[in-house]
Length: 499
Image (tube, rainbow, N blue to C red):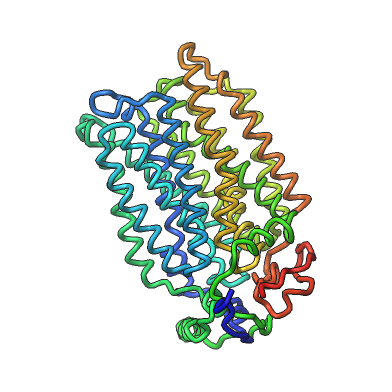
């Protein structure tokens, strides 16, 4: 442990960041960091829309419906492992280093996907692409929460996570001309689709280089001078745009600076000090991961197999637009109505709606199924986005990135890997008879998980709206970390001493 603890300081950096009015600097953060979700949406939708192109043995890779589902599961598995690996590095090495590295991993992997020669190459590239995206989740969500003022944190997080569907809509529409053999050779169309993701990633990388390191991370890790300089630069920029700044509301915090935080302490924090929050995050992540990965990874395959839809892009675009509108239009309510009411409400409404859709599945057409899905996922998208918001704000700062990674990985491993495999198998088994009701069991499982998630949110939800991150969960390095933590919705359990 020698050399780990570097000193004790008292700082007002969190309070100064939280009192800032919205400015162009915050738009830079949103554009530079939040656009990762657009990449993820583009990736998932391209794969979902091109299932028929990948199945062709001549121009594609000769994959079966099960292979398409397997590729989705492998992508999610890569994201889980990438989240855990890069999440730990994000807490140890800093937010900025990792959100540059993870974007580079994604870019290289998606380019390699375009050159796939057989299913095994394709599966390997999907794994690496997922690893890059999974690492992004941890680095990006932690950095956003630590740079965005507390008044706006909920709406920004939910809206940014909902921007996944901007990529989904764009990806679905792009696949229409790219998969039209009269416009582009069938052997090249699906490959070009992956290449477009890499082009977008390079553009994001250029913007992202201008986003600073989190001052909150810097002062805890013994680099308070750098953190102070960044905050002064931000204040100067914002003051020039908005006029005089208000006084900080939350005062100062005293911390024992440390260069590293042990994994043992992190594990103790999650499982021993915050068991209710652990159950909450696990429930939310499992439910939304199963719902989205099961339904959306295989939606194009469902339309093509049971409803003879040749161009699924239009249907998926409508579905995606509804999801984005839901996250965007409902996001403000997470700061005004409150976290608990909104998370519980969105999960319960979407769960009940999905159950009804499962019961009506045999009588739905491609159009009515898409309309049904658009209505259900208008609410589900905001709820799913709030799962990431919850994991990123209810645990101490030193563990933030790894906690996001942990719950994403565990929840997604349970719901996101089993979902595509289950749906792929259900579609395969029901395809011979063309009986779509054979996949209804998947709808019912997803509905049950969402309803359970909503109930858990009612029981264990944290009222984090309008509160500073340090008040929601006292940093492990805080001088008073050995006394009971405060903040609304906290579990009032004793914090461990990091010494």
